Image (cartoon, rainbow, N blue to C red; front, side):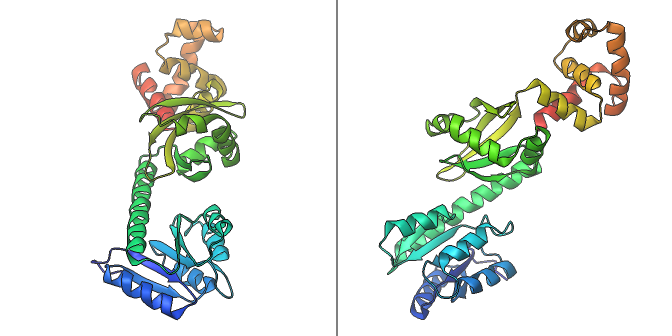
Length: 302
């Protein structure tokens, strides 16, 4: 168990005893609790038993090298968010690129410079904690939010974001594709916080709202329905409404009178009122104002 005074739990995997001893001593002296492994397979087993805050992987190890270990870590839902720093004596830039493409956040060249190592570890731990904090807060608030990198690849999504995509009949691949073709220019031009962009994902229109940058190379965004059909689907599923009831409630939430709703939906004001009776009952409210507030809350949350 990590002590209260520990700066964090770090797993170091290296097949060279001298390197392990050097990094263990340096990190422990800086206040970190250190776990050590001699190959990638051992590192994976340790990480699954005691998930660390950060992992340092030697690129070249027997049995399972750092690249394979990183691939396995990123494929594990419980471990995928842990930042990985590669340790490499390789001068080939292709190996560095390969490590980063597999999900590594950084690399250190051997022989490792002590001050550089400690600085990089501190930065990546700090970034990881900020990201986790933002994600947990958005998860708690039920916000449909996600983070992507500068290439438009999705890094993580809240459950609410996944639910919104599912309601719209979309998936993560279609969202990532839309980000890459429609949003990268906007994101790389440094939008202000709360700036919005319309996004066409398949047949569905969404709005992206820029929430900030929790870490370098990472954009935090919120999804907002910007499509009539999707808004109706959300109200229908949120409250167990019929298609017609969801339509009536949607226009009610926009401040329309029964007469105006009747004109829009080609029905009499009396018929509108008949649809509103079960709507009020299903929402557990007694009047139009409360019904509109409940509808807006459901749409805002989604």
